[in-house]
Length: 218
Image (tube, rainbow, N blue to C red; front, side, top):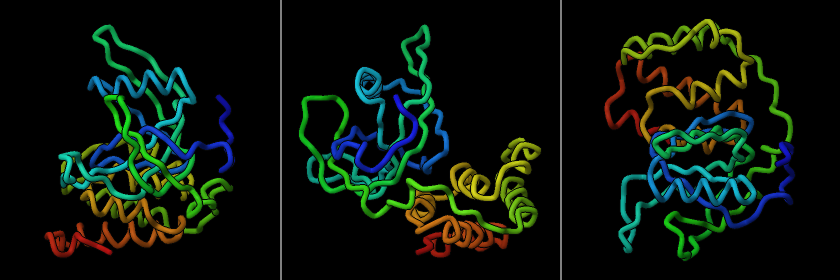
């Protein structure tokens, strides 16, 4: 499977893995532990096919058919690595390609869900990540305070060495934000916008203003 994609390389119909509190971005890695039968089938079909899986967040509501509703924007990735475990699980690394917008769901006989998607709003995802000059020391210092507040641990020596754009995307993925906050980060226009929103959310948390009203940032 090639690892450099153009928009014309991607199908408009893709399998979707709805997972709350899990976002990823183009050129980032998302490790997944697949154990539910429907998503094991999805993984097997992807491995036998084009290796593509779309990730979206569910918003904890149900539609008229009783299916979990999903946000309209997600990110599609290809299976860069996969292995199976003795107990039947799949361990995969999904490498982000581009974000997409959901148009509508397809009825299939599969256990998992498939959607028709559109990539046109995210053509910038196919280019090189824009270089951005930010105060990484300040951002990391604020994030450390956030992690201490939530009693979370990470390897800060590794975090401190990554490029600014990678730092922003990584923190957006791993920080203990709400579903709506993560979705806001996913739907940002570019890395500069994402950095602004990320700092805004972290500031709310470390200043103690993280009640429900303040956490719904738009």
